[in-house]
Image 1 (cartoon, rainbow, N blue to C red):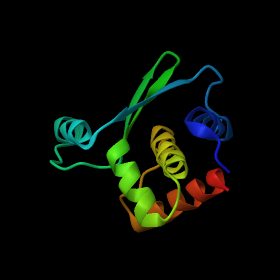
Image 2 (tube, rainbow, N blue to C red):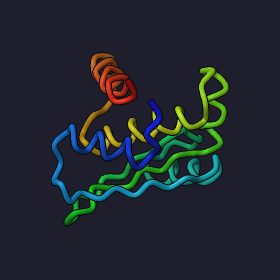
Image 3 (cartoon, rainbow, N blue to C red):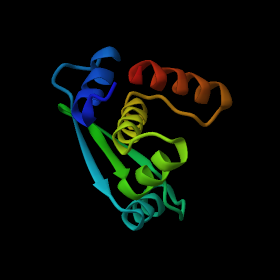
Image 4 (tube, one colour):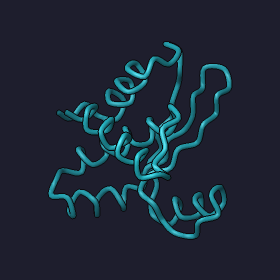
Length: 120
């Protein structure tokens, strides 16, 4: 089901029981911009598909930054539409804002299960 970025992020926030007034911004950039952000904030000098930045100030939960270039490549690789891939990246970013991570294998599996649940 394709809900669109706003719908899918709202679904995650509601299900993960955030404050009802939580706000999230979603920005689309190219590979160059996301690489610059990744280098500046994570000290990783390469492009990625999605970044999340927690704010936790007032009603602002955080920012999700999605590389449209990466989304297009991923969609082609996975044989899905660009809209489905953007929804997946939005869910991934929202889960990061909710405290989920995938540094450990067990956490990555849990995060993937949550992503699949939201996208079903």
